[in-house]
Structure formats: C-alpha cells, structure tokens
Image (cartoon, rainbow, N blue to C red; front, side, top):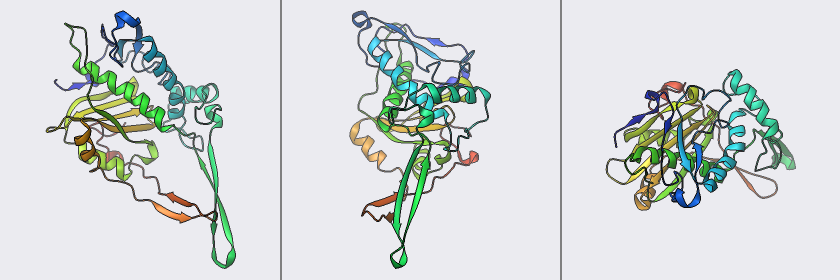
Length: 296
C-alpha cells in the first residue's frame, strides 16, 4: 500500500464493496445499507458539504450500532469546557453543540448531554482535627467503552479503504488486537501519554494521514517498520483525540509498554479512600506532531 492523504481528495470516495466494511459479512446474505463513514450528523451541520467522505456498503446491524455510538459521542465532543466555553469560536459548531446538548442523551447519566456536567465532593483531614471539602466540576464525560467502539468502526473502515481491491470489490481487516491507549479533551493533549505516543510513532511509516469536514475530523494510520503493528489516531470535532494501536498481540504489548505514562498525585480522603489526580496539560501548537503538522 502506498500512503494516502485525505487532504488530496476532494470528492467523496464511493466503494462498491461486497463484504461489510465493519464486520466482513457477505452483504448478499445480510442485505446492504449505504454508509457514510464520517456521519453527516457526527460533525457540525454543513461542514461536510463539498468535503471528502468515505461512502461504503455496510450490513444493517453494523450501520445501526455505529449510528447509536455517534449520536451521544458527537454531542459530547462538541461541548467544550465545563464552563460552557467551546474549543473553537465557530458558529456552525456553536449551533450544533447547543442543539445536541438538548436533544442528545448521555449514555452515562441518562440525561440530556447539556445537563450531564459531572460534580463530586471530597473531604480531606487538616491539622488539629479540622477538615476541608472540595467540589469538583467537570464537563459531560465520554464513556471509555463507547469511545473504543466508535474508534474501532472509524479505523476499521479506513483500513478497509486502504486495502480495498476494486477487482474483487473487497477489502481487508487488520488481524490481532485493537487497543485504545487514551482519549482526551483538547486541554489535555499535552499529557505525558499523548506526547509519548507522538514520540514513539512519529517515525513510523504513514499509510493514511489527513483531515476533512473542514478540520472537524482527522485521522492518522501508521505502520511499524519491523513488526505487524499499526498506530492510529483520531480527532473528533476539534475537541477530543483518541489514540491507540492494532496488530499482533505480543508485539503490540511490547510497544504499548514503551509509551510514557502520566504521574499521579495522591491525597487521602476522610472516608479512607485515596484520591488520585494530576493537572491537565495543553499542547503547544508548535509541538503538535500527531497528524504530521501543527493543529489547526
């Protein structure tokens, strides 16, 4: 496979695949549905007009499950800080984020996304028998398992695209494990784990790098030069990044162990529990190498 850049592609790419782009099932048996890999409602309304997208055939079951993941994750990645401030002053983002905050339901809280700000209180013992209570407020939270599932759908479809044979009208799938290293909001892209991932995979051979939907969707897939392991990275709605690996399990585990980890601070609570925390670290644009160029 030769490297592919989405930024070089203008019109949507349409595959006439005979097997499901997500699970590989024979579509002649299950039936086929038209699928936009980058859901038009996953990004702000209108940003895909005139932009590249990957349009494929998928079985009804996979199409339905992916759509279910997209609904609340799209809303959550658009919300921004707990204060309500968006990550970008884009009127298209603001309009869609406000609408989805009311209409989309968080699978974590069961409430509308806009009403799912997370609050918690912790009490700590001080000197001379006194104590102090702190209240923590966080923006609506993504569910780790749901993020992994949607990332798997996106990366699987793009790997299928890279291996697609127009003669047989079929694509391939990466064998082995699919592992999510981290997902993080924009104000924490400079964490040790994110930087460690960039440092480790930055020299790997790029197979697909680029962005579309006016920068509201980014993807990078790189191949290790010696072992059957791939790195992948996604950026959703300019607000969240998801990073990970896929491939042969033993080699993957060895590589995963080489990624730097974030150091946590510990503070004992009055109920006997232990609060572990760290400061979030933004990423300076000049240091952003995840997609091969500074972030927009």
